[in-house]
Amino acid sequence: MINRVKGAGHQPLTAQLKADWELMFTIHPLAFEGLAFMPEEQDQAPVNDIETPTFGMVDEQKQGVDYNKTPIPISIIESNDGDAFDFVADDGESLGFGETEIFRCRLSVHLPEGAALMYPEQIGDKQVYRWWYVQSASTGPYKHFQEAMIFTCIPFGGFEIDEN
Image 1: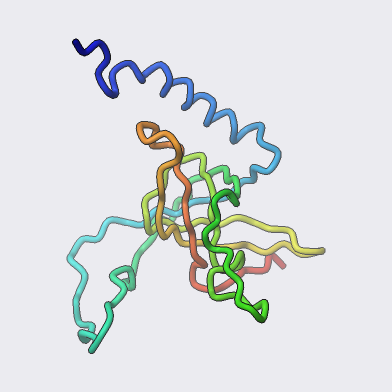
Image 2: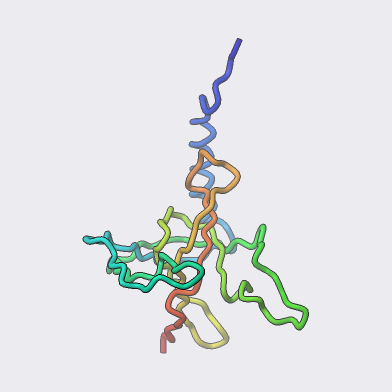
């Protein structure tokens, strides 16, 4: 006889997790503020005028994207747990997946892949703005709780803007 059904009755736990998740971004000592820019919906299908490579694949995300001009305020917590990207070559040089090329974080709002993040960072006596592209999102330990995502971001456009 089956007494419990998978997924049934998890609503109270999910509601508590959601409340705790929202509170975490207001009291966490490492949380900081930023802005998210959502990609606008494409009116037409992307033009496939890229020549087919002899070998390998063309990155499907290499297409022009327009972003909504009104940013969404967000809270960010950098995530270093489970970093599979911290590889270092024998000579100490990065293999392309070091801390300057990948930014993993938790966000106070769920963002789609392709969104852009911006946050100010104080470096010495000047403030710079960091821009990141949301490359992917993975679920946390609770598969039924979609807010608990870890976002993997890559540099957006390769630029920084100096406030001065």
